[in-house]
Length: 80
Length: 432
Picture 1 (spheres, rainbow over the protein chains, first blue to last red):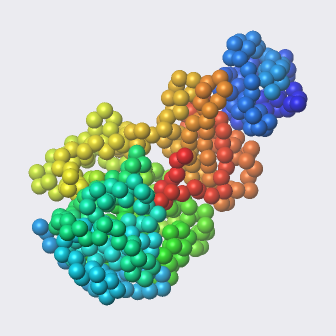
Picture 2: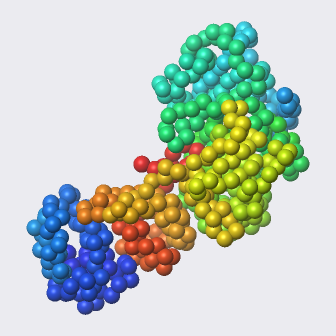
Picture 3: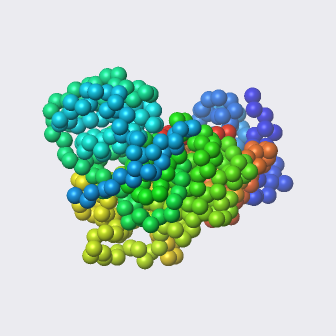
């Protein structure tokens, strides 16, 4: 089971590579505020799929409800 | 017909052997008496030995036989059927040059005088037989005043680039060729060192592979005076690096295609070619004419295959950058569809290759949730930077790509660091 900390660590890594500030990212941070966009989310999914060795299982409509980092963590944990 | 004079005193160095051209193309007559009986035939010689294939092709010239040479691994069932339907006799030769098998023996088919054909798979993977004459293959015929060079031959026998080198050995005064029995760049280089090479013709990928295997000290053992590049798009990074390692060498890059020959020859050290070369009219018909139509390169060439005598669409995409025409890649180059936005892999590769840490790269599409595909890249890093961890390297590279203006959707979302460069024939980059 992937923990919230591990998922947040991956989110921070994806943003850090692009030169974005990751110092103040918490579970309550909104995706808009930290500039975490759809392509970043796609990359997050790829990295997790690589780690667990299989594709994530989700419906695209579920993505509309994601607003915060915590939402992303919950989404990923449900999709595993 | 232009009669080409064989330069019998030119030398071929093959591993530790030294053979004069006057002794080439004659091995067969001594070893295979059956060949003396040929009156009319079209012959495809097949072997896996580089020397035997070289000897075979010179035999074809000396006896004015309509033929070709084929590497054994190239002869698929598909190609075999094509050749048999065209009327070729297929002759398998062992490493000693002795005939081990003949398929479709000497059906008394009248071949065409002064025809030598080249096999290419082009972009489709389906083999094509491209007929040339010895004159259309010998694109260096105006270079009879070329200084004496000992050339390292890096190309596989039977390829168009190989014919450029072999016709130079056969017909251009003072040119010697150094050839290895091995097709690995490091082995080819070692033979070049052994025979004091002064020139080389190869692809950029050959050099990138060699940079992994040889350090600067090893490279500088060869005092190169002439470096010729071709077979792939030539980027500024490779030109600059070679100039840095071999400051005394003249560096030339050539745009060529099996169908139209070697047509754009650039010596100014810059990628692409001058925009002034477009749309020039040449009444003598001795120089190629070049134009761009809908972003694609069209050429009318005096070195075209005997089947082509008009403008030919190369299928290569070009773009104008200032006063240069830059060749980007093939018309059917892979695009990555990132959520509906098409990213040309070649453009991403060109930017990646400009980074000093990166020796080689290959960009492709990776299936992704949400957006369908994302850009992925396999990268080989220069030896001196391999101690840097992959996460740190990734940060450095992505940061660089952003600084070069690459948009978000074109950034590689999966970066794989490979240890070696995956190669296909003739040291071109392999695309899956």
